[in-house]
Length: 365
Ligand code: GDP
Image (cartoon, rainbow, N blue to C red; front, side, top):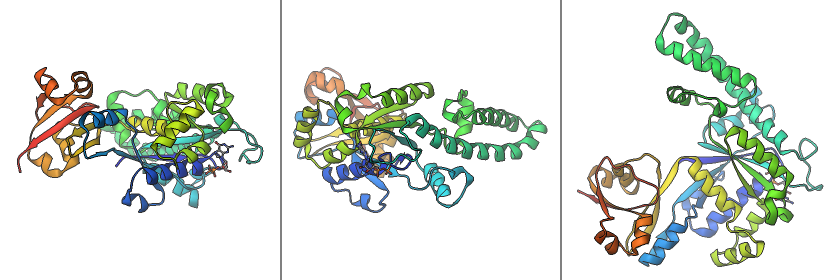
């Protein structure tokens, strides 16, 4: 499964957030596999469509889809120099598919900030710099290797050399790979380089409890938003401390608490949703009287592959998929009505499944 790694400098609220994540997971359901690795937290992906489908179908049970966060340990500063825990930090980041970078946007004199004062941009740049330096090293190594081949007029090597130099120049200016303009072909090539700064990133602005009702007035949040805009990165504003409390509540209590706070969706739910879409994930549903269920797939996957997520036999023996979009089903109010209106399609092997599709697979055993 794809996973998003939580990183941040010490004392920014990472553990508090990760605690909220594992709590929320434990509270929501029983995920036995979640306990295997203490650094992985499994959460349910919040989705109102699943609630609506449940109301419509009234199944015996409803199963949401899940998403994994990984807590990234290790020392940040000096990590690129490759010593012990710093090395571990980088190799842990290499293994995740996206980065959730927690930055401190709360002022609390009782909690020491590693660099003496709260400045989220400094925090962001400190970590980004370590990642950029590590990437610079990878790119330099590669350059040494392909340079010779490029000089021998090897076409692939020439193309690769060109990209590598472009990246190197960016890294030297402290620009991450994700902000470098690349052609589609170049991007494909770069994916093979295993760079850290090409991974999609989401900045998590951790604000204080007092700012929760007026998040956009927080000066630090404004700074983070401005920074992220220039990098084409996303921002989620949360209060990790409050999320920790929310994570212990059941659904009803949670709704009441959010209303009291004057917010529509908890910060953690936003974080889950945004991380999910940042990774290019999407959801399709199966809806029967026994079970209504959400399934995660990668955007671009075709119907047989999506069927294979449920069971490999579904993929092997795939015949067709009876498919209706969520919006159509809701508009017509029932599967039968949608069918009568011609909104239920019989899709074949080449059908690219869409986010929100409700699917019924037909297959040979
Ligand atoms: P980590 O080192 O990044 O894992 O940070 P921790 O999660 O351990 O948090 C460091 C300190 O900041 C702890 O004392 C937390 O209780 C506190 N903290 C975390 N989030 C918040 C917050 O939103 N508001 C306030 N006031 N304190 C927080």
